[in-house]
Length: 457
Image (cartoon, rainbow, N blue to C red; front, side, top):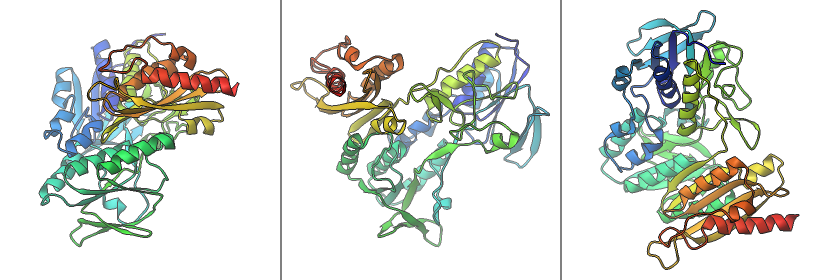
């Protein structure tokens, strides 16, 4: 049941989740006093665009920022940047804020949104602590300045074969550097199944990125002046003028945990479907620091994407303003571009289904993105995962050239709605030679997967 909003809304964290909550609450409840604290110099920026800025696709970092503090001020939202909340007192309903000038102040609130995002996981090896993660606009500006201050070329080591690691490796190749990507895992992009990840690895290597898998880093070594010198592996030492860490992130919840907020099984803040933190009235969480409900696994997970952060922020803001909104969960849809290939996934991979003890079948097909005779066509591989008994589509992965990746949105809708693969096989998808063959790759993959389901029966 909707309630009247209380007067002072305080936001901890000035990016997607927090500022989406603030903007929604402001629109629905003009009477609220809204103040946000952001420890960095920028608000509402696109971290996903950082590799393209580093790689020189565009030169103005301001293009990564969707709304500045001044623009929020015009909407009646007071944003204080370079001000870090260092303590939350839920009993007194106040926070302690440390500003860049070392001044410390207390600020009261009636309602609070915790939206601190995620923080980089630094590998426990000597020298790693001195490498600044390139995760914010200001850190990207500093890293790009280091690249431009060099004489051109040079060498770089990227540690971690995630989406971001591969995107940064490609960005550095575009800068004319010699790039090695290393990962302790036996494959890159662990969100994909191995057969799909192999395609991405081949594309990266074809671009000139050296990929070393199943290796351990022993030390990141530096010159006397602090500049990177090399990365020491167990059996090899890699020259490195620059080092990029892409070894994962974790929800930034230390402040919330110290305040007594509940941490869920994923390691992120526990929330209900209204984004409320359980057991504390008027406290919400949104974004990378908060859990989400996985609609297929039927358990809370922590998935760090701006799409979810913005939606969760909007849900929190609506409820703060006295409205009624819920976040329905997620299914793990993601997309990226690695060298010549577009890469996408949704739902469960075969590995994830097996780990969840779900009996599945899968099928992969190789075809082309357009009619074979149409200029610009290229390879696309589609893999579908389905429940072995019911035939329900549980997941899909796509790797292919231009025109491949956004097909994942069709699969995401099918997974979301619980469609079976034999239904997908007959789905009325569009056709014209510039966009696909007569049978779209998704229909071909659905047919193969439906055969696998029938064979398993």
